[in-house]
Length: 383
Image (tube, rainbow, N blue to C red):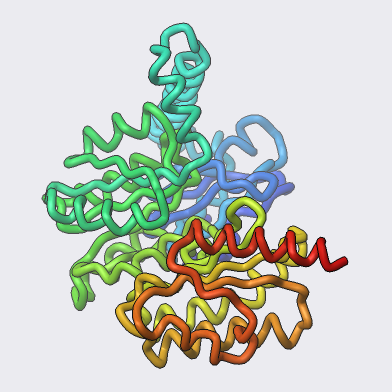
């Protein structure tokens, strides 16, 4: 019996724990192989066979096959022995499928063995890799130097490490060397390079679970549809809006986006108000305020520095953001000592905001640190 089934994103194609019969053929879409909540691999090649091992080995399925994108799957619900008896060519196709899997497993084993041989690494590489091990690493695949430069400048704001590749071959080589936090591929690369590369990267153990994003021109709906249907995690549009691009990247990498504005430095919370206070940025800051205040309390930090020095003048938007943040701290009756880094003739006006009346107005960050340290000494002397 043969039946063609359509699956929506997230629907289970083959459940775990059942004893299977026959096999399945992917007609279209992208499927995920999941074991223990972890994505092991993807199936995205039309005509790919899967689900046959359960019957061949008489074992219950130990992984879930789930649709990553809307997919069509042909279920062959007949014993493999019976199918092969009727059509011997099926046996050859099954052998090729198993052979390709074994080949990929051997490649992974070889790479892992090479990576474990630290004696083959130069001392400088070891030092550099250690220094960058905790940093976000982004791979940009595009043949346009200007695009790579623009994205590199955007990601530098978050201190992310950026590498680039100009074609499929160089991208694959980069991923064979080490993993990445995210990969961006231009949909404008020749032919089907972007889609083919995304599929090939999902067989590389270094980036198997890495989000892969498509870069498309704003308004190019066919490219957007193609990217999402091909299994890309998300899309960023050209020309780039720095804040929106960063927001998408933080989301797909599951990072705390508030790190763009709030940081713990030494023993104080540092809030840098960006020069570009668009509605998008303002909303992003406000959405993260409560969480950052809670984290500050959990860390036992009682010092706060708000840096507005990048602003040419105190705009209404900046006053709104700083004022709301200060009011939240005051309303929660937190024993925090504050300082504001501000320059220009209007610097003193920040003391007019509710909650900021007693805060020090400082010319630079070092001055703000000294001010807070002196306040702490004065409080101890009074006690």
